[in-house]
Image 1 (cartoon, rainbow, N blue to C red):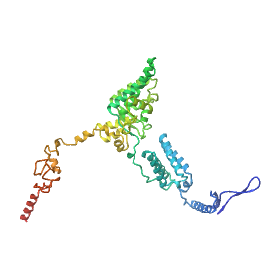
Image 2 (image 1 turned 30 degrees about the horizontal axis):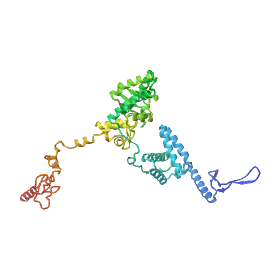
Image 3 (image 1 turned 90 degrees about the horizontal axis):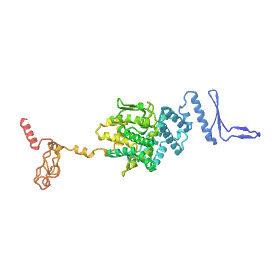
Image 4 (image 1 turned 60 degrees about the vertical axis):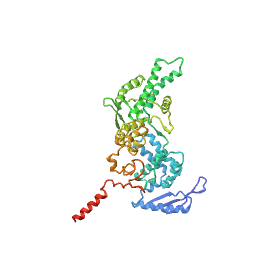
Length: 468
């Protein structure tokens, strides 16, 4: 083994010495010459010994399978991970988001190789993000990107372990920045009516003198009706924005009253078939006529809600304002297009639909998401539920009126001033809570509930002694 700085002659004939050290050695009958990438001789010698040992182990079949990957730049691993995600067929938005999160981490921690991936550094970075303006959900999104990258490194046999395993998720329930609420029945009717009227009325307002031609007026009317139907369809099916935009006429089966959400447009990338209400099935035929009148096709591959008629986020906000509905209420709950999905799920819960059925119609992997995020409690009859939990014969109980039923006495709720007292019921004298005689009173102690009385126990013991 020889550690040296290479020397050569330049064009002028002067000898020039390289800046970094190199190593030259022979292993298994072949000559190896590699740069040690350092100007320090002691460091160069240590690296040379490690390199010789590694090459000798490789020659006898004892090579470390992770050694080569540890030396590669981390940017190359990230690029390969991007290829892996693209090959899985994830959406472009998901792919771009994952790559953005990973590159944010690399820029913040200055990690250059796999050795630089450190659990503590990642934890510190996520903690700094959580202390800043980012929400818990945004921090968790970056954490999930790190975890997924670490799992891929292990699966691809590039690292011995996942350096990000064990990173704790933030509690998103305590830091929800955008809480959507459901439309009430009156709000939804007002919203649909405003969306139907706004295009035509705004067009007439802009031309108060000349007015609108019949053709333009019919166009504005169709735009409003198409938009109102889209909102009604979203509230009646719970479809997401992307699923509505990708819905084709081939996905609608009016004979079976079903709509198919293709895997290519579904958020979960799984196909689903959902039932349609009869009024929506009938309205689809009217929608097809409106689309054709607008000069757009209604073939199997054509969109039910074509791009020119599909509302943007700004359009939805203007429709809400035209209906007199605030985009955000005094409890910081917002209304937008996705709120129609919340409305659909909340209405199912309010109608008493079984939670598992609601989860299936919402197409959620976890029922917790259906119940916690997409069910607006204000749509539920909480007071009616409390009243229904009270037995019909319980009126006036504890208020000095009525007679407690046997079921109440069975569980010991008959204690107190109504029973076992020396004074009138409800006067507060005689026994303390629990049926025990109050100090200075002559009230008897209440018998134990659910067991024999003390007199009965004494009689049974005496009978046993006589038999013995």
